[in-house]
Image 1 (cartoon, rainbow, N blue to C red):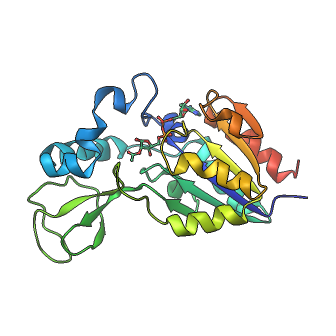
Image 2: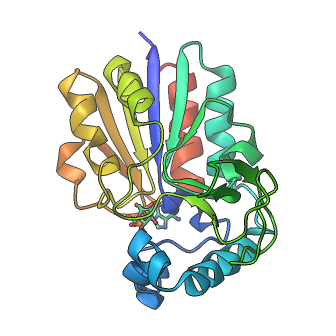
Image 3: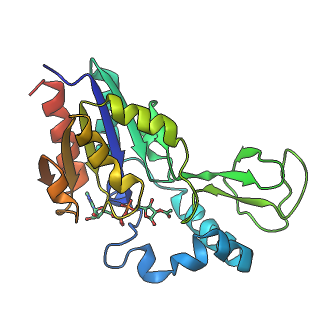
Length: 234
Ligand code: OAD
C-alpha cells in the first residue's frame, strides 16, 4: 500500500548542487567561519555588524541560485502522490518554494526574511541589513536581524513538526549530516511511531544506523530516482 503520510527532512546537501555550500563538509561554511561569532544570539549581541555582514554575503550569493532536480522531484512528489507530503527543511534558502513545494516548513527560518526584535514584524528582505536599517513596520532602527534560527534558539514550528512526525508512515532524510538537534532526532521520533525511515545522502551520515534503508549518491540523482519509485508505489 502506498504511504499515506510522508515527512521529508532536508538539509544543506539538497542545495549543494545548486551551488550553495554545505556547513560541515570539507570547505563548508563552518570551515571558514566560527558559528559562535556569526550564528548565535551572543555573537550578534557582541558584534552585530559582523553577523549582518555574514548574512548579507549569503543573501547576495543566493540571488542567482536556482532549484535543482532534487527540489523539483520533491515538488512533483507533493503534486502527484495520493497521500500527504510535507517537507521540513533546515535550509534557509528559497529553493523548495522556487521548485513549487507548498507543504513546506522552514524550521531554521528564511534568509530572505527579516525579523524586527523591537516589534516582532517579519518582512520579506532581499537587500543588505545593517544596524541602521529601519523596520518597515515600526520604523525603529537597530532591531532588524535575519529571520534565521541561531544556535541556542528554538527552531520554528516545532509543535506542527512533532504532529507531522507522529502521523508519518514514511520519514525521509535528505542531504543532512543529522548533527544538529532537534532535526537530528526526527528519525528516532518517526521510528517510535512505526514509520519506515530512509536516508538519502551523498555518503552515510553518522546516524546511518538509525535508518531502515539508505541510498547514497548526489541528491540530483538519488532523489528523482527515489521519487519515481514512490510514485510507482514500489
Ligand atoms: P551539513 O553541512 O551538516 O551536512 C550536509 C550533508 O549533506 C552531509 O552529510 C553531506 O554528506 C551531504 N551532501 C553534500 N553534498 C551532497 C549532495 N550533492 N547530495 C546529497 N547529499 C550531499 O548540513 P545540515 O545537516 O543541513 O543551522 O546542517 C544542519 C544545520 O547546521 C544547518 O541548518 C545550519 C547548520 O549549522 C544553523 O545555522 C542554525
